[in-house]
Length: 256
Ligand code: PXP
Image (cartoon, rainbow, N blue to C red; front, top):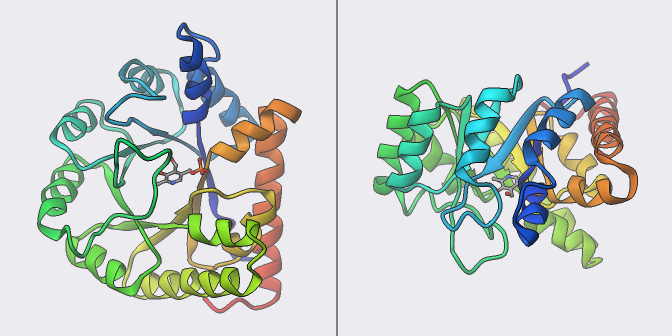
């Protein structure tokens, strides 16, 4: 059977709730440790320029206390680069960042921003930090990631999820096809393929079925669902949904 994608649990929004009141509760590091016990394969945290959720001290504590690999999402800025080089997380995912956005809207322009990104990919890789680029499922972005020497791309699933929730079945199907083609092209070009953004129990299946997808990073929905059923339950159910979908994809002979 094709191996199931790893689940990276993004804990940013535990920090969002904490920061709504200041203080220390709820603690995103405690959530990360719980996520590990619940079967998460990694923890993802986005240190944004404006520190609206995760803060510098959270990253330091995650590096000290976590036994799972940490995937640090970061903008390609000198400040973030020096933080990443100081802590040396397992992985860094370069994301576009605009102050006014509510979440990461759209992928990096790896093609257009080639010269700017090259130094970040090189310096992080030289420090043995596995670099991924958060991109739209677009062949030009895949080729740009290859030429930048990034070993991993994370495909932005936000548009697919939005189309599903808008009830646009054709649009969602077309976006899923874009995700499948980008994953197949990236796989052929030697990239490791990750995916994420906005995924829920109802939308994760078709993405988890894509045979090249090795890791899914999911946060907002898991933390939201935890309000109703607890974090352990939301993570366990997401892992099950991913595993079931991958097994089903393999049974249906999803082309590798
Ligand atoms: N992957 C990347 C690169 C992201 O920026 C985010 C959001 O921080 C996620 C995955 C997780 O998205 P969500 O919180 O919507 O599940």
